Image (cartoon, rainbow, N blue to C red; front, top):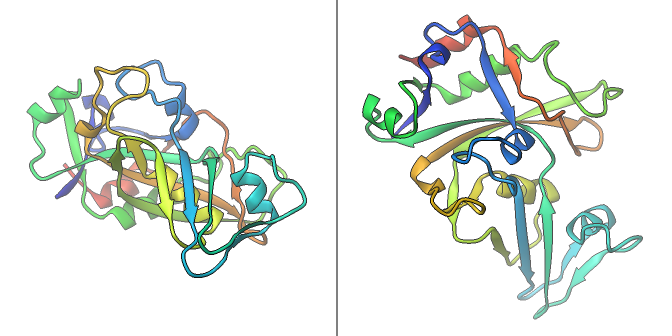
Length: 236
């Protein structure tokens, strides 16, 4: 299987002067019916305790209950269950396809006239990050000490955005699960089959160094200019 970016010819990494990195909110509010997903990064999580308690501390409990629980933990005793909804914060993402046989015909089927391969995904993420300086826009601009977490992998498609768990999970783990799960069919355009995209996703997640909380970025995509370095991770 190969990681392929289907694109317009002017955006092909072989000749482009910049590469655009999108955000969750960009795809939540996009004008194109082929990619818009207003629930991008959303998930509904159900926890069933089997033989030991599942405990969420206050900040995680509040997030999972959408702010309804304040000043307390969530404790799920053996035999019990709890369900909660969770939105992932706005982070930077780059969307590709994961296919065995890339072709011009496949690119055409998605409305593009070109494509290139990301041959080394780890290098790709590092090289893109090297171009973040002066480009990244965090909502909380006063935070100076951050870490960047790199995650990439194929998107999982399922009928509904529900996840079942039998043990305790960190809030970050749940948010990442949301990032890499999509419905098979667009929730607002029933004629659009998301699963046909065979999406492979890259996510750059900014963490506050001390608390490890995920930091939201501003909505607009950013243009990364160190394309020559990024090309080292690509084939075209």
